[in-house]
Length: 180
Image (cartoon, rainbow, N blue to C red; front, side, top):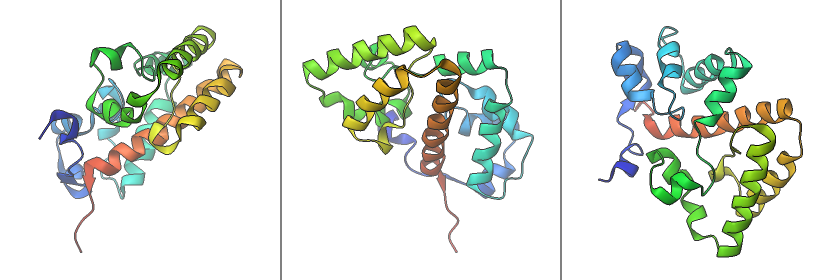
């Protein structure tokens, strides 16, 4: 099985997660939030979790409780859509799978996306984040155009909402539901 697909096979249940020591908890969930294992480290102390949603709310709460500067730095850890990380093959397994649909962009679409990404990052200071799997290509392009025009505080909140969608989907793929 490839490294990209390894996370898609649920190996742990919520009950398993609740029993893990901090090191194993972070090893299991540290990659859910892009290059930010500190989120899992902080969430571990809140065990036990009653549901995957409870776990996710706790992890998002960790992010939201940080300063504005830390949240912006956190967003800077995310790759641009079809950006240099995608071209170099250096994205995380999660991001590679999630952005796979953008591999088939035409040359014109790719140039447009790169120009829009650059304008967004220049205005807001962090990359555009959207739950690619929850949007069509047309919706992604429209959201990028629209969200570039917003003020940065509004966009910071919108980017975190997209992170919430992305990470909830990731947790759902990582954790198996208990068999009744």
